Structures are given as C-alpha cells and as structure tokens.
Image (cartoon, rainbow, N blue to C red; front, side, top):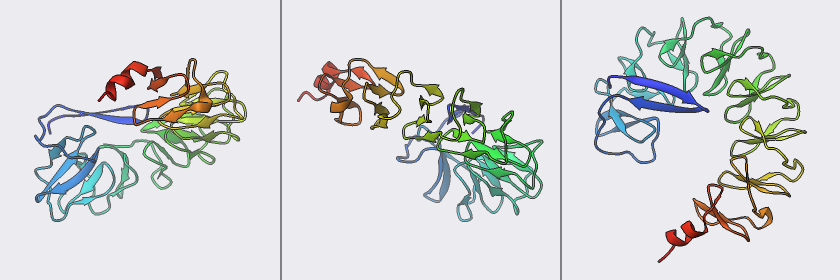
Length: 265
C-alpha cells in the first residue's frame, strides 16, 4: 500500500488508503490482521483486505489490533515500522507500543514522555508520572496520579471529567458514571457524549437499546428528545425500527410509512 492517512474523530479511527485492494471481502473482520492461504492481510474498517506481500506467514504474530511482527519486521497496519528494536518491541495497546529505547504512537516515536513510567490506559489514553495523554496529545491540567479511564472516550481524575481529552463543563467527577450507548450521568445531569441532555430527569433516566434512552418525561435517541414519544410503551422491533403506542421510529424519526414499506409482503 502506497499511502496511509490515519484520522481519529470522536474516538473512531478512520483509515483512508490511496491504493488498490483485493477483490474479495473478509466478513466479520474490521481493522484486524488475518492469515489466509499462506498469506497475511490487514483488513481495514470497510472489510477490505490488503495483502502484506513481504510478511513471513509462518512466523507472523499479531501483537495488538494495529501492530504485528514476524521474524524479519514489525508492522503497523500493513506497513513496516522502521528503526525499531525487533527483539524488545511490544505493543501496549492498539496505538501505543515500546521497545528498549522509545515509546511509539502509531508509527512515530512519542516524544517528550517519561519512558520508565509510561503506561497505556486503553486505545485512547495514556499517562506517565508527569502528564496524561489523549492519543499523542498532552491533556493540559490533568492529574496523572488520580487519572483513570471509564468506558469509551470517557475518563476522569480527582477534579474533572473528560471526553476525548476535553473537560466536560459542569460535570461532577466524584459522582460521574458512564452508561451504555455513550450516555453518562452524575448527581446533577445526564449526558450524551460530552453534552448535557437538557430537561432530563436523573432519577428515572434509563438506557434502553439501539441508542435510545428514556426518563419519565421523554424518549431520547443519541441524546436528542424524540418529540411526541411515549417512553413507557417503547419496544424494539428490529435492528432499525422501534415503536411506542403512537408511532414507529427509525434513528429517532417517525417512520410509520418506511416500516410499512420495508415489511410489506
């Protein structure tokens, strides 16, 4: 593959390739390595496999989601990681790795970190004795001694709650807890991602399914109020459609006609 551009947005790594890919598709494998027919492939997030021509099939070993090695090389995605010590190299998480001299983020040396105390917390966050990092960026003001990750892109220290490395305004760190489908709450508010869900009721708020949540007042989809809905009669119909006593919804929008057309025999 000739060119790789890695973009990280809202916690999802998006990989764009300027290269041709194999004609066949690999099911149930996204951003992962596979071995097949005595060959090694990296499969991207669109399930397109890219053959690693130089890889040694017999000795190939997966180290993490994005790192691998064989008897000759270390790989990041499908590319050879140059100038690393193969004997001491180890993956710390999806994007973080180390050898006997350096910490790496992706295929680059992670500069200005404390080698001995560096620790990858998950695919997004890391810390050393001096600082906390989101990807390869320092989080200003974060306290490494109390900083810990929650679920997904959420994390907190003694003083603040963070989403993708940014402080969530007004969030109460001691009482903050994460829920499913990117919802969270503290003693004062309910959140979707890093945004307060206005007029939500903390005591009755509950996560349902497929991005939906509810409280005594309303049904929510991805943190947005579903106008005119009835949370008490919420029911999942299939992967795309839900309903209450008033309507059928798809992705938070009324979809009575769409459901009828989709399921018309």
